[in-house]
Image (cartoon, rainbow, N blue to C red):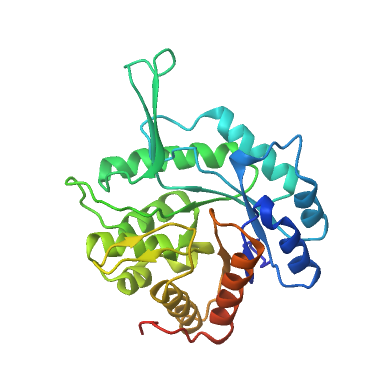
Length: 295
């Protein structure tokens, strides 16, 4: 851990099918931290495998997916209380969530009407008004949490006609106005860039890198027609590993420590698949030379 408490080194997101593998990595000193989906654990009944990692000194970061910070309503206090309780139970260095819209009320009265759940992380419009709402919601979450909040860029597969800001400027403004940290997901960044036809390396280098708490990397599928599927269930493609290399180089050039880099896998979560991907990630981080990297 650094002085500011941000994760360092390489890591794998905790999933029950690979709990034993992560325990072995931790015992060998090859797991610097981990992350658990907050909605999958109860702070009163933590999995023994996770508490063992915590007790062995491996930082555990609760990672939320349903808070909906970019929605029109203030964050649900019950969801915030759940995140806060997990942060306390794990003695976590921070809590993370997404810059995403996930639900809306079906009637003008959200307390008594139906709520429409998107079932997916959707991008908010990147406008000044939307940014004001996001800032208010992030500040409310920060006030309710006992540890710092880091927010993640999602795989935004479309843009809104109303957009007046691009993602690097939008997130830079959010950081400047709230002091929140970022979880920079390079796989999501790649997916977003492919979808909108922008240069992922140019986008990456315009993010506020000094505010990044840690980094996500994950796999996907490149189709012959140029479409990229952000699956979090396949091998990391060369351009995504290339972004890891570019990111590490950017930190070195700026005299900043490389933040922790965590492998996510949400399907086909087997020890064999995770071991292979983690080997590839650690090799990329170790020598900063990745096939397909763009300089």
